[in-house]
Length: 150
Image 1 (cartoon, helix red, strand yellow):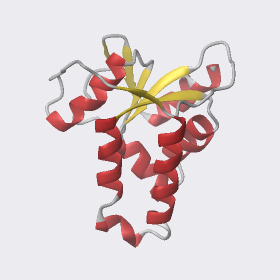
Image 2 (image 1 turned 30 degrees about the vertical axis):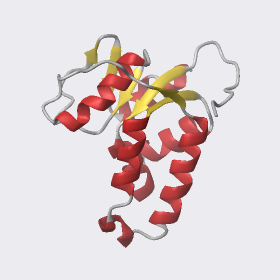
Image 3 (image 1 turned 120 degrees about the horizontal axis):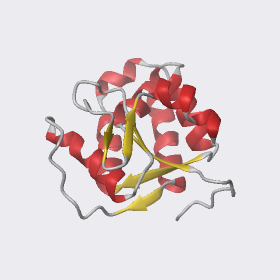
């Protein structure tokens, strides 16, 4: 099912790195603002591929997160919501720019979907500020410098 987003001048298309989803479930902060006030409020279009969604599922299922109250329940809700509202893509491009090859799937999705932003907290691997028109930014940068402009 493809979500019906409210009409606005131009909604940002975003790709969320898994660390943003995990952080949003663990504590309050910019990642939780992005998930709740941007994605769930449908003030931006979240782009998703099967490979990215499978990573979300795998990472959010890790036992180490069970120490956080209600993590599994909240993770299931988040995954279900993302799956329902996301704009889905099947990238047919291969990008090998990221040293950690498992992170290339996020860049592939962002480029293929012509996303405006790839939002990540992973500054170790995503070391460039932009790639083929996609801005690669932190959650703080997105909220403070772009979200208010929507």
